[in-house]
Each structure stands twice: as C-alpha cells, then as structure tokens.
Length: 376
Length: 137
Image: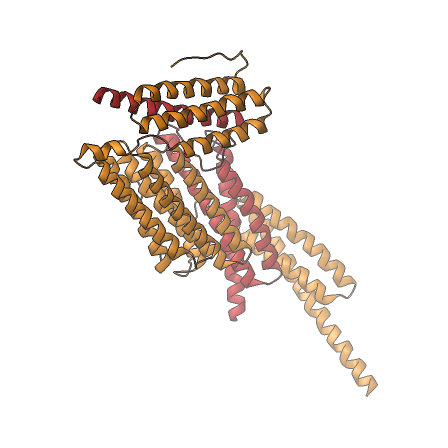
C-alpha cells in the first residue's frame, strides 16, 4: 500500500514537471515571437512600452527556470503565466498604430457612467468658454476649479472601491456645474453650456430647481438694470449658501437636511425677488427705504477677516493697521447711520473719513513708503 | 474558452489599450510646450499609479478588482486627454487664453490687497448713492 502511494506521488510529480516543461517551452516560443515582432515592426509607436513588457517577461522566465530547477512547479507555472501575460500585452502594443480610440462601455446609471458624464460636461464647458471668449467672473472660475476637484475625488473613490461615494461626488459635481452654466448664461446673456444630470432623483431635481430659480432671479435683476440693495443681496447670498450646503450634503450622503435646506433657499430667493420688486416699485418712498450699500455688519466682518490675514503676514506695525482699520469700520457705521437719518452731508463726511483710514491702514500693511492720508 | 478565460483575455487587451492611451497622452503632453496644464500632469500621475494597481490585480488574476481600477484609470486618462485637446484647440484657433482648472496659490499680499480694494469699493458705492440723494434733495 505504501509503495503504491509513493508511486502515485512520483507519478503526480512527473506529470507536474512535464507540464511545467511544456509551459516553459511555450514561454520561450512566445518570447522568440515577440522579439521577432520587435525586429519586424521597428517603427511601432509603442515600441518602448512593449520592450518593458518583454523585459518583464524575460525576468519571469528566469525566475520560472529557477523554480523548475528547485522542483517548485506551481511557482514555476505562476511565473510562466505572468510572462505570457506580459508578452500578450507587448505583442498587442507592437501592432498598435497610435491612433486607436478606446472607450469602455459603462452601464447606464453606474458610478463610472456618471463620473464619465461629469468629465465630458466639465471639459465641454471649458472648451465652450475658451471658444466663445466669454466673461468668466472669479466665483465662476473658482466654481470650475471646485468641480475639477470633485471629478478627481470621484475617480479616486472608484479606485478605492467606493462606487457609491463616487456616484454622490460626481452628482455633486454635476449640480455645481449646472449652477455655473446658469451663471455663465446670466453673465453672457446666452447659453454657453447645457448641463444635464442623468438618472437624477427627487433630491437632485430639487437642488436643480433652486439653481434655476437663482438664475431666473438674477435675470430679473439684470433686465431691470437697477442697483441691488444690500437687503436683496443678503437674501440672494443666503439662497446661494443654501444651494452650496445642499450640494455638499449630496456629496456627503447626508440626505436628511437637503429638502429643508432647498426649501429655505427657495424662500430666500422669493424674499430677494420680493424686496427687489419693492425697490423697483412706482412709489419713490419705497425706493428710498432700501439701502444700496453694504450693511455695516458685513463691512465689519470683512474688515475683521482682513485684520486676521494681515496679522498672519507679520507686518511691521500690526497695531497701527488695526487702529486705522477699526477707525474705518466705525466711520463707515456712523456714515450709514447718518444716511438713514437723511443727514447726507454728514454721512458723506464720515464715509470720506472711513476711506482715508482704510487707505492709511492699507499703506501701513502693504507699502514700504511712509503712510500718508490720500484724499479721494 | 471558459467564461473566466474570455474575461481574462478581454482584461489583457484592456490593460494593453489603456497603457497605449496613457503612453500617447504622456508623449503628447510633453510635446505640448505651448502650455503646461497642471491638471493634465496630475491626471497622468494618478492614472500611472492606477495602471500599476490594475496590472497587479490582472497578474494576480483578480479580474473584478482589475475591472474597477482600470475603469478609474481610464476616466483619469480620458479627462487628461480632453483637457489637452481643449488646450490644443485654444492654442491653434484661439488667443491662447487658457481657462486653468487648478487651484493657484494666491500670495497673502495679493489677497489682502484685494480685501482692501473690496472695502474701498463699498465706501465709494455709498458715496455715489449719497451724491445721488444730495442731487434729489
């Protein structure tokens, strides 16, 4: 019985050795064919790429021979298999002409399909903008940069085997791009890029609705040709913020808040439209009640941010910058207060003082020359 | 041929084709001396790493993982190609005013200067409204 078992094992090993030897011969033949092909197709565009694979196949062949000598036939076959794959790729590449197009077929509605759609839409928008030489304001440009970042994030999610995250990110990118295309249309008074969002659900449609309402509101502002009051601007800005929050929520997969955020955004658009209509109404007293300048709180907030940035820059006299910046804020607040009291002369004097202090602060922060008051 | 063998043969062809697309994109990018698009360079780097990952899956016979990673690589290569082609069109037919899609680092001085300019603009706006009101009065 023992003898029979030993005989059986020897038979299996003999068969494995024989198989490995046959496979090694096949690899050698294939290597010869590849080298011959290299000689024949000397002007191949992908010669360098193919050569790399042939070199890899050569390394695999040597490793396979070592394994064969050590009677490691399974390992030997693995190296042969790798070598054969390298040669298959090399032979395919050697026959390539360089003008081959290739596009994998993605299932409709798959994450890959959506990411590819984002890629086409984004590059199409870039091409259209460059072709039309149209106006691209800084926020639009920054928006396009954000969409590019979202595309890269979506592609990386696919590489990390997170198709759901990729789908959400691509969808967010398309929604941002949709808003950007609407903004471009408003700024240039013509359609630059038409962005579609395939397989969009209820929430995506709601976000799109807010985006369209924002654009329609901007069109009304533009057609009226009147200055927009701070109140209207503030409601409009809040609606834009709500849109961004909704899109971020889609990207994060946090769908609970989206509906209410979009509703709040739509409400803000409505308010902006309402106050704008009131300002363009026939009664002059309505017009006078609506300020056309930045709210003091907003002015103060920007000045505050500016001061933080200046302190980070480590300028020579940060205290002096702060003193004059604060003075500018105080003068601006007072100027607005006097404006609402219809004391226009005093308001103008204070606004001038605000300008002088602001300019002085700028000189201290940024100029190498000694600062001086420069009137406007 | 078994189903697995068919799938494997298709995967080998896909790997070969993607490597060719990547190689062509890289050559064309280097030749495009008129404009070095940073986003294309980034796509090339990322696609290169993805192709390496894809080939590892292919040689280890993990075909499902290969499919996923190679799709991601194709998306990066295709995006880079589209951007490069758009730049070439702008270079040949346009005014070489490229729309950059990468984040540019703005120096703090420029950003602070912009902040001051914004606030000054608001004061000037207020003064302009004041002038209009004075005229009405």
